[in-house]
Image (cartoon, rainbow, N blue to C red):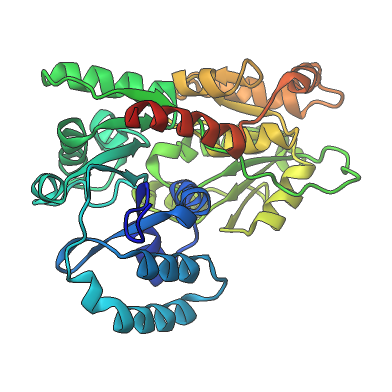
Length: 389
């Protein structure tokens, strides 16, 4: 291997701008970080900057990987990146040869920008792109205005330029296949690979189940918090302060004004709590004694909170989605996301002392095996090897 001829080209654009913005890592960010750790040491970096995409020389790539791996706050990263750019900007502007190598882009980064297909052709690279979902296309009513059009550009670009596609679930690839058929496009070679599971550090001595039910994730229309608030309004009307408690964990996102208005307008008698975003330790502490995690989403590409909870031996009541049937391994109780009566009944059943329904899922949980990063990368490595062969 020559000094600037690493086997892979690893896109770091999303990681750089997320660290620059100082945002809390999402599920996609965690995947990017895992790929950085696995592929970074032997790869050259690709960075989308003001003047387009750049393949960085090996030395500049490795120093950027080191910067991204370092702990520190937003201000510290910004100072470090400005110093890095000052030392390496000249090298960035000198085109590096692609030599037909695989470009690993797992963050959707830049797929909606003009000029990408032309750069891929001129750079002589083979894009390996990860697809996390096509929710803006299938469920635009739950996304930001204009996101459907942007995501259609991303997906059409993926179908046009990708040497291969990695899906975070078989359901994501099935939906890609259906969309591609609707526009008359072939689908590149593809493989589903579940991401590894971040293991929550649960207390060694688990507390007995409390009366809390938890919904975990950004507050947005797609997550269907309104269904749970309708259930809890009923519970409080009937049981008063003896009703079980709903704990809403997650930052406020988009299309959530109706949720916030409902929380403000209805007196839940202290039985509905919005905590905001919590760190992993606090999430683990709340989940440790929860009656169940509730996950009533209208659509998901994967559903990391479901797997995290099951891995931590916390029961889950979730929407009856194809992807949850895929990753839940037959463990969670699944209900239609618009069935208020069904969710009310299930929550009451789980809230009962010595709940048979909850005990039955706890028994099923013994068979659950969370996907991990070693098996993720074993599958990806094998897939990439077939493409290189």
